[in-house]
Image (tube, rainbow, N blue to C red; front, side, top):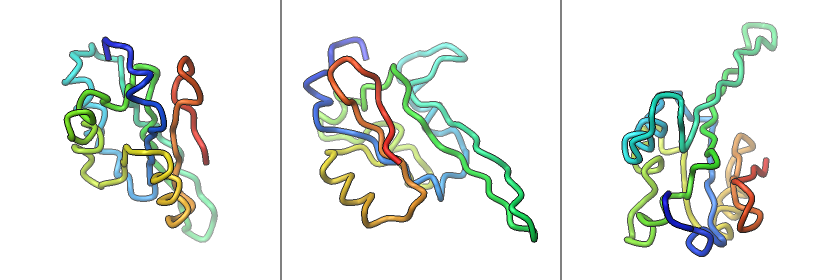
Length: 130
């Protein structure tokens, strides 16, 4: 995170299949530990959406990991052929970091409960595509 990762992140993104996210916080903890972030700072932050009562005992409750501006998609780890830490430590296997073209294909083949984060330019933080 300390170096400029514009080139390393060009054409890369993070796909979250939040339908299966259990809200375990492994993604947050692995990133915080690696970069020595103090409490309250995050490279990826778990967000709770719900619970929502749709009636007839039909509930919706989602957890969505969201990369923050501090996230560089673990460019150094990817350059070494490793997975991003959040992806490696996700116990439900809902996080995928990779090339945008591959992630878009994966998203098109998957369910509707996915979000794709990518950098729109070399300055902007990660943006979401639903």
